[in-house]
Length: 114
Image (spheres, rainbow, N blue to C red):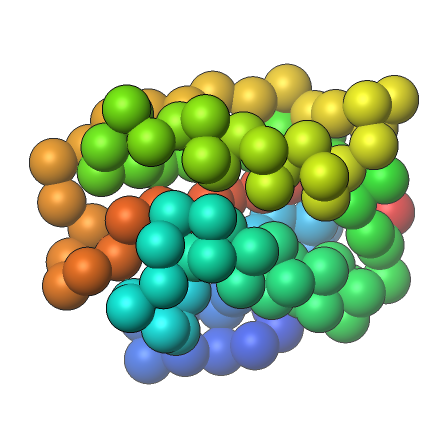
């Protein structure tokens, strides 16, 4: 049976099944922030979402990161590397996209285990 948490009008932010925790696409609330700021805000949200599901960033298995400007990837990477310890880095893909809506620069999707 799946456990679903943090319902929005279009999805549940967190879905758990068989010890796996799936966190849907997460963006920042403050679109005026630069790439590093938006990344920090999203990672703080992910800490909260993972904790609510009974897990944390040390148990990340995969991450997919969507950026509207791949030239700004180093800014995101610096914040990412400060957030997750090298021994806990998940499998990861970073994908360039044309638009995430508004002034959103980044969206992150993660999967973890319990």
